[in-house]
Image (cartoon, rainbow, N blue to C red; front, side, top):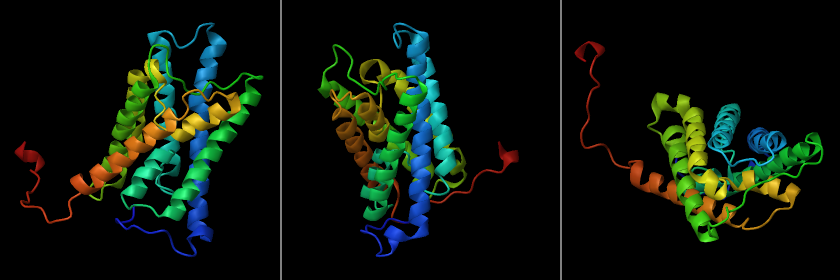
Amino acid sequence: MPPRRYAFGRTDEATHPDSIRAALAEFISTFIFVFAGEGSVLGLRKIYTDPLTSASELIVMALANAFALFAAISASINVSGGHVNPAVTFGALLGGRISVVRTIYYWVAQLLGSVVASLLLRFVTVGMRTVGFHVASGVSPAHGLVLEIIMTFGLVYTVYATAIDPKRGSLGTIAPLSIGLLVGANVLVGGPFDGAAMNPARAFGPALLGWRWKHHWTYWVGPLLGGGLAGLVYEYMVIPTEPPLHTHQPLAPEDY
């Protein structure tokens, strides 16, 4: 990732091949993620008459989202940074790691990828409506909002720690796996309450094709607040701007 630098974007950035390639990578990766994530929901609805009501089905959902996001990030991290999520892009924007122009490109690409994935799911599942996300019965939108803020904060904080932090070193090689596993864990936590979106693009395509908009704002406001807060916290409180007070040399293997 580039060093912290707040900028609207260069005059040629909108048409530069790097921007086009990065937007294409975000489109394809978001398509992969939404197709697998939402498709697993439709698959369970095809198998079970009363889906998503047992622990085993929740585990299936968590694994599907974790595996799909792991693959989607791995496929695009070398081209676009592997955001696959408008909330991650927003956190990087507030942290000065991406320009406004490229942010807009990423958001458009992510939303289009989600819509195309949902459209194809609508076609291949023989007219089944995409499900998307909704706040569960007995859970207020306010509770869903706070849940989305907390889960997305953890997600974007992990993205920063493993993929953006200049000190990440070899940890960057497992960034896609770490991020995917955290999303899977958060699905186990938030799935029974609000579906655990943590991603406005993941929520938007299925909502549009299934025309399910109840409490949809929750899945925009919550992730953007949580992602933006994580970007600011990690950028200004965790990444150091001064030389370290103490330095140390790692122990040699024989010293253990």
